Length: 479
Image (cartoon, rainbow, N blue to C red; front, side, top):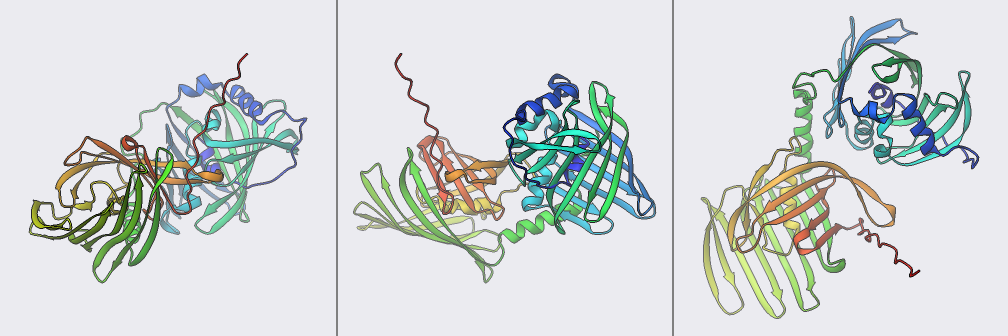
């Protein structure tokens, strides 16, 4: 809760490990018990905290209000008389701030990851969700408190160093390096004046020092499980405008290249190379690939190209492939709500006409999978409600796809590599086939980094993100 304001201001300090120190896990669990216990935290689902903000050196004072709710929503304001309002918030997917001095700001990269991390509700009791590694790294004295020093490595962002009183188990100080719009800032936060709020023992005074400034937040009242206004965590219009600009930048002029390696049953099956380009008032995706299906059939995709206008409406498409020794060529023109296909199987040519929406996404019935990059560029991250997209399976028929944005997730790859990616799930029933779910994990530029077609046991990985081998359970030994 009140760690939100302090959590945006922290730094990495390294200490040599000492085997005689208590384990970090036990120190953190002891701190949870000392402040009320996990059961007490679990009873709290939202909070409203009010207080004061002060810059002692400048004699500046203001009012603070902090709204928080599970699992990771927050909205906080600081109002300074004669200056104006400073706001910051997160709805669990988007992190932002807005001030009278610097205007609206959409957080991205490390700054966003750290803001979402520090927005975790009931953070003290949920440290296992927040950190991938915790270590006891030393001992130190902080304002007459004999403390254990812990280094905590979050799942997103830089390591954090925390100081816990050896007797009371209360958090006394936090230090870390945080990304901001002005660059990385090292900030120290001191926690003081612990008092009971309901069943929770919480600090009521937070002193933050960093970038040559010191400010103090004093909490004067706390209300747990209060009914919050329905729009408390809504994204402000100024931030939505920045998000639209960022989305437009995804399809900025110029080409973006990609390479996917596909696996079936854990074994390499296919590779695809492609480019997504936006220039001269057109958007195009073009590429090629090779596949070896079940070790029985070799498929060569010489090309699969789609040309669209600047509104992602298809104009033409061309596919050329060879299945074993059988060549297949198809060219399609889109106009007036129709797709007119010229299909050549090597011996005959036929024309097929299908009804399509003007903004249909053009894909192949099976391979290649890179044409789904067009959907990745178009899906909205502003909502988790289902979104509908018409999908035209070239040369076959149009179907409707239900697309759901699942939020940002940390995905593991080979060699311990991880990435925070946007997860999009697509449910679609092909013209001749059973309902299928395709899952895509996208980076901030909307490039597909990982994909999964679970019904076919097919996975795909972008170049530079190697497949993590599944964990193999140990073989039991006979007694």
